[in-house]
Amino acid sequence: MTKPPLTLYLAAPRGFCAGVDRAIKIVEMALEKWGAPVYVRHEIVHNKFVVDGLREKGAVFVEELTDCPDDRPVIFSAHGVPKSVPNAAQARNMIYVDATCPLVSKVHIEAQRHADAGLQMIMIGHAGHPETVGTMGQLPEGDVLLVETPQDVAEVTVHDASKLAYVTQTTLSVDDTAEIVAALKSRFPAIIGPHKEDICYATTNRQEAVKAMAPKCDAMLVVGAPNSSNSKRLVEVGTRAGCSYSQLVQRAADIDWRSLEGISSIGITAGASAPEVLINEVIDAFCERYAVTRELVETAQENVEFKVPRVLRQPA
Image 1: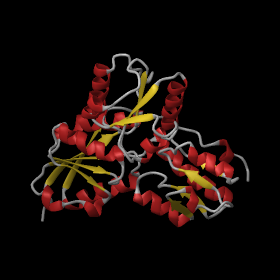
Image 2: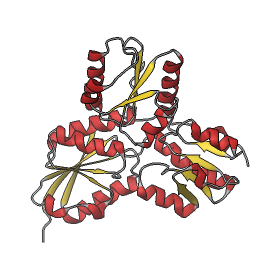
Image 3: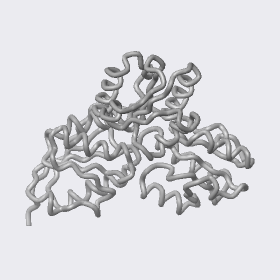
């Protein structure tokens, strides 16, 4: 039986960003240096395939530092941690390595700098997301106000409208965040924002590629994890950009083929913590069922690289 024709649009950039690449490398290098087990507080990145692969090599994933023994190294995830976590590790004389993405660390430094200047902080982010928890945890509890929507901005109570600054989670929707920032500036004209926006280059680039690809597609799949903020935002961006069937899949087994019956084009992208091997698995699944013509939709090129911490570059 002849396979039906299908145009497969592949977004670029997609998949791993420099911060994710660095975080995974940190766990692998720590295992090489200190042997197994190495403890990791929270999933190093939000991807089950990646986490399971590191677990097989000897990484032990825990949610809290209290779950770690004193005598084994611990790594903090790419999403960042509250200040209380490294403080507790130091108090216990633990070896720890901070795998926080440097672009998240930049937001932490910003928040501290504004607070030191006497400004009250407002954070645009998702409640309970580890990155938001980590950033808000750079300052004493209650010092950072969280807003998730323009409606939250209307209801927030501040100490002094003339002494405010805001930061954002790095993995938000660029368009949604712009709306919230506009609401903040409208209500608090004196509010100070970051010198360069906090949403990271990788999030922005992946969303731009989806905006370019979505109008061409009958359907779009985002390879990523359900707890990955940037992956979920790509689904939303795809829907808004004109592709009404935009879905998140962790891997090829999750594809709902019945919903895709009759399509003549598909768009594929991946969140910043999804490895290329899973993207290829999804592409292969379409090649088995369709006569595929591939087209790359490239909106940017990335050549960012972050160094691993010095402790891992020194001999044990």
